[in-house]
Length: 115
Length: 109
Image (cartoon, rainbow over all chains, first blue to last red; front, side, top):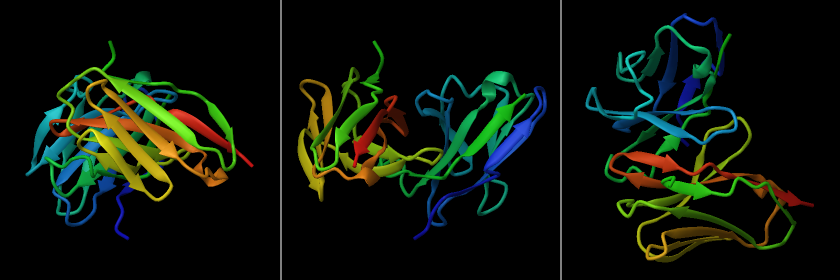
């Protein structure tokens, strides 16, 4: 069964450093998403991406964040100058269609720890 | 008022019992209503989705939506220890999913 994969599973970085979280969505999916979940909090939408551009982003997704689909398979989230409060689980998701976005498939997540 | 409200629990029930999980919401613009299951340190897994008011059944799971009351429920029949997880209600608005905080469920053997 096809699945979304994410690397690394755990990333530790120092405050102020840049990190890149990587995702490989399901191969025939067209819409891609990033969510984050701070420990003990709810899963929060960050950004959606379609046709090589951002289609929607939340207020969390400020100038320190960027997303890219550098090739036909990877989808990345870059966080510039990480802060302590960026520590969270980051989930990538993908879906075949945007309007039926209920059917988003989530990856296992990357746990980001900023020290 | 939060867009989606969900009691975080934990909720502990004996094996074989019927489980009822609920969420309320405030935004009439929500389109699809979903339930996700999330095991510890894993990503959310879609269990069921519904679009209109009413019931939808899938095996031991029944999802119920009442749009007039802005209330959704998930019922689990014949609960098993493997059902122990966090259950997230979620709703779509435009191209994104808005999640509830999740209810931690423990099924006691």
